[in-house]
Image (cartoon, rainbow over all chains, first blue to last red; front, top):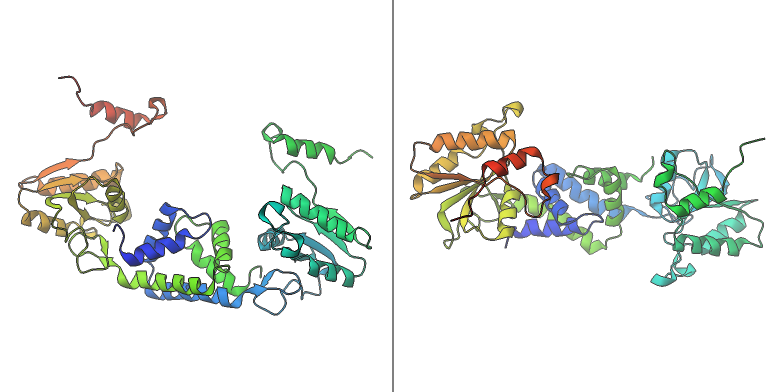
Length: 200
Length: 200
């Protein structure tokens, strides 16, 4: 019995978090018991609160405390430009860039036959409904370039093929600032294929 | 307002933990709201519990839920062999090795004039009392080889100089498995100085 019981319990809860190993969990638990009483109680309340208050936006699948999320209810944004993303983390990334003025559709997953995740398991059916209701919509498929990402992109492209929808995907290419000789060959190949003409 | 309020609050609490940055805190908070209700409540309880139940052992300065810690109250251990360590994390490391059969004295800090931490700020006075009460005690000073560690080692050595105490420190040297040509020169120098005769 190395740790006192209550410490061990706390370490185990921290260890359940993504990216937290034995050592980090131990460090976090030891830091926790140094917090003052009020802070600990507030932390505990924040945990339960976040769980209770946050739910998925019924329109786009993002996270919100309200009936509909802030982005979906923002009338200043272009509701005909829909960026389709894998998860809430992607939304945060785009919003940090800050240049996208359309709205999002969060799939909360990708099609993955290997993991038995089919189109019906992710948030696609409500996308069809949204697109049908939009006027002259454009879908930007912003999914990662993995097998699952490509499969999902192809699937969505196929669904909307015969409808009046513009569909685009993010460009592939060299990340800004990257050294050419350190790039993997697939990225380099894609950058060549997607090359952009700069002469007139 | 990027995150829902309650999510932001939780992210900020995770960010207060040692070694947790923006990105990890975000990941952890998003994982948290996927935990089921019972798990969340248990996590919250574990936080408050650990804070309330764990206190310092009045004998050695380690952490415990009891009046005196398990190691101090273990009569099978050699109470004349006292390993002096910086913090509870060191204790865990030694106990994981599992070969040390003496007891510990946790200083909960090191002397550091730069940070205005003097001998009276760390757990030294009770060490004097323990040594006085022991029969033929040996102190193993197991502090790190930083300026603060060396200063504290020297200070403790000086206190007990005229008393009937054997004092030792951990050996310096090459970590097991390390490549000689990757070692820093100070470690190599110490390993040379502390060399051990192996011929008869």
